[in-house]
Every structure is written in structure tokens, then in C-alpha cells.
Length: 337
Ligand SMILES: Nc1nc2c(ncn2[C@@H]2O[C@H](COP(=O)(O)OP(=O)(O)OP(=O)(O)O)[C@@H](O)[C@H]2O)c(=O)[nH]1
Ligand SMILES: [Mg+2]
Image 1 (spheres, helix red, strand yellow):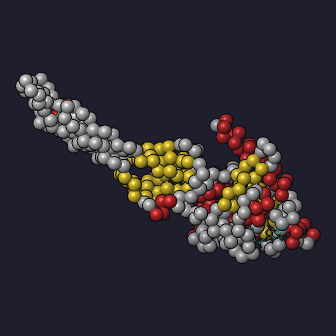
Image 2: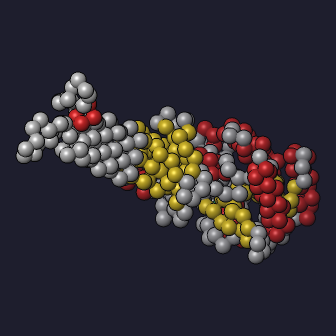
Image 3: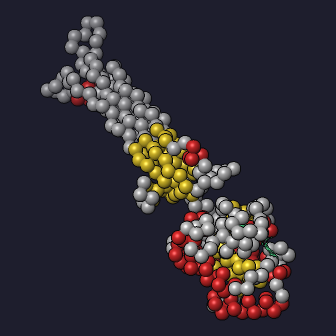
């Protein structure tokens, strides 16, 4: 299935049905009063997060959604039928933004969560409604009220507990493939990963968390170089970031700083998130390189640096444990807040 994490759509709620002018006409009853009914309500536009969807691709092909007009009123005080709401199904994690792409109308983070984005118009009053002691035969009936309409942006921010970061080729997808059952594409060229991928990491029968792999970042990503930073939206909700650095390359500190500078440029609080730093591909390093590169990285980052290898599995279980503990701690903090 193709992946799409942004879509612009136009929605319009149903107009209200019109009220009518009608008078009671029956044999033997003279001057039967007004009995024109009200119009029915137009349908709302509702957006609902549903499980099992993980892309907005459906909204690439179909971009206009309209709810039907409410039924018109009728004689004998009959109200028009309300029309059905239109429910747009989106993946869990979808943010609904106004046309300015900034104003958040709704953030659907749980399956089943719904938001009414446009309200249907009320039906117009029929002439029965305008009857008064001084005007017993009103000829006034109102048209239905228009339904709201607007342009919307749908933006998917995947819900993952932990996110993988690093330059292209750092070994992010390899790590995801050994930590979970996910089967991301892996290759020795940059930008192998073109779309975010999620995997469920199962530590044991009761402990699991969701890990996200996103395309690699390069210098200038925030200005659009490489695949840019747009995929960072998918790690915005993560409790912890795992920053992987290719230890088989000579300048791990430069690699670390490049990625951090892009996070800084992107904003959204990513640099304040808990980060675990790991020097990857230890299997491809000499013992001297291991020692000197870890030392250099620890000095530059001011924190401990893990040594791992996605290929041999060295250090992988330990780091998954550490990620899980950070995720649980953050879940507890959110629960308390
Ligand atoms: N020796 C060694 N090679 C590794 C290790 N992990 C990944 N690689 C290799 O490094 C290359 C890149 O790996 P990927 O997992 O595709 O890297 P990535 O970070 O997902 O790259 P992008 O998707 O392009 O950002 C592949 O050739 C992998 O086989 C490791 O632990 N040791
Ligand atoms: Mg990859």
C-alpha cells in the first residue's frame, strides 16, 4: 500500500431543508390554519479515527465531500427528514488543520475518536411557525440555513513510542528489522527508506512498544535537502529517540552534530526529547576505532554512548530495554499529568 501523510480536501455540510407555506384544507373546515412544516437538518461532516488504516492515500484520489441537504418541510405540519452525516475515516494520529495549515481543528489520537468539522444547516421554518394571534395566515416560510464548508488539511503523525534517527545508511531500518517483525527495505545506498515504517518491539509476553523508522536526514534537510525533515512529524509524538551513528565511518561526532542541527532547525521540541545515542555497526570496527570513537562521541554529547550492531545483535537487547523503560516512564508521567 502506498503511504501518504498529507492531504488537502474540501468538505461541505448539508444545507438545511426549506420550510414550506401550506394551509389546512378539509371539507367542512373553513379557514384551516397554516400547517407548513419546517425543513430537516443537513448532514454534518465528521472525521473519525479508525484502527487498521495507516495512510491518507484514499484522500489523494477523492478530495471533495458533501453531506446531503435536509428534506423540505411539507403540509400537515410535516418536518423534512434530517439527512445523514458524512463520516470520513482517517488513520489514528491524524491532525485536522484549517486551510492556513496552522490552526488545529482536531487531533485524533485514539481509535474511535470523532470530531465534527462542519455542522449541517438547520431547516427553515414553515409557515405554521409564524402563526400569531394577529397573523393567523402567515405566508412566510424560510429557506434552510446553509451547511458550513471549508478546506481542510489532514496531516498524519504516526503514533510511535520510540523513533529512530540518523544519517542515511546509519542502519536504522536494519535495527527495526531485528527489533521487530517489520520488514523494511535495507540497502547500502542513502535514502533506501522513503516512507516511515512502524514495528512493534516485543520484549516479553507483557511488554511491548512501537518503534518508528524514518528516512535519513542530511545536512540542509530542514531546507529540503535529501528527503527533507517533513518525516520528523512522525517522531514528534515519541517518548524517546534512538540516534544511530554509523561507527564504520570516520567522523561520528560530525554525523551526530549534523542530525542534531537539523532537529534544532525543525523545532517542535525534538531536541528536548530523551535521546539515546548508539554507535552502530561495531562488527565492522577495529577495537581501536571502537574505543576512540566512543570516547569522542561521549565528549561531544556529554552522555553515555552505547555500542551496538544490528547485524550481530550486539547490545540490541540492552538498548531495547532502555528504550522500553524510558517509554514506560513517560507514559506514567503523562498519565499523572
Ligand atoms: N556491518 C554492518 N552493516 C550494517 C549494520 N546495520 C546496517 N548495516 C548496513 O548498512 C547499510 C544501510 O543500512 P540500512 O538499515 O538500510 O540504513 P538506514 O539508516 O535505514 O538508511 P536510509 O534508509 O537510507 O536512511 C546496509 O548495507 C546494511 O546492511 C551493522 O550493524 N553492521
Ligand atoms: Mg532505512
